Image (spheres, rainbow over the protein chains, first blue to last red):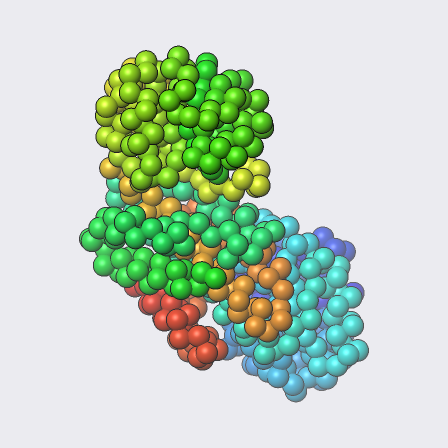
Length: 253
Length: 253
């Protein structure tokens, strides 16, 4: 099982580490910035690929993990390889790889930071391929990396991608508002960290609507008015408070 | 250390369990609904208090953990007791207990469900008292329940309470949108659960602004337009997408 990795960002880094841990050999690592490729290659005992033209053409798997708008150009350099070529993008259709003989998508639905370790075996891997045979190949590989394998079409993946913004980027922005509200009063963000974690733990085994709490779902207008009064110096946060509270009330079933 | 508990909701239940585990004796449990008091009293080996008039007047600590607008009425029935009387409300001033000789606040900043166990020793306990002496008494008691003790004034507590809405109730509503987006396509919410948990874990040791990801912070207009296109059947969610994305861009420093 010989793998070539095209990319060296957060996804590529975690994928390379998980692959190596699963006993797969990363033969080459390429990156637009060769220094970054060198750092990752050293971690997983792979060769650094300076020029895409010199890519190993006998690998079993090529993983393209670059910025969305760069996938097509990288794929072009792989024309004619007999191995399976996959990209890792949540927002890009499988069709971007249609010029290749064997193509697929391996989209890990998680937020990765290079410096933050995580248990890759629990990362949902969303798989798609251009044929049933290639799907089976991809599934066999992905099954060595994670126990959470999902067959997901390109159309479904775009919905996952927008849902990920709602459950990851947007909550993180709300954490930021909490952080700033406390900082203004000289209060430590440690006061909110356990609450944030528990809120995420609660929905691991429940539906979010079933565990909603707070003044909006209770219809506690007095508390909501008092809260908005505390936000008068922050009209943007006041608007967010208003809009989300109203929607929580309306969503109540 | 004899404790009387006035209330039997989520906060009262977790507080009673933690107190008992810490070796404190819950003497009596009262609730507006006596059946609920009976359930909790049985769990912590306490007597059920049917009528507030019959409250044990020699307890060391009285914990009022009822709906905010019922605190004053319960406090009235305790007039003249020599013990320390505290409420557990994030949204209520200490002054509501001003007719009592010894009063304070013990506000656990966490989201509690009766059926979900959690490690109470990590729950931030926000303390306030009407005198330095009573603060010391309260601090000694709270220190047996949790290692996260914070001295918080009534004015600070109101800010914590609104911040808690931003980092708990509002993210949970965004989880609900994610859940519904996936359900419409027949996709399992298990696809998003690890992402939600990792997002909350990431800020346990980082500031939220430092770990923000996604199209808004990258200024990736193309992806944002595509996402909004997927939400045309949900104008409310489209508005939330627009508003939060715009604010993430503006908050970027």
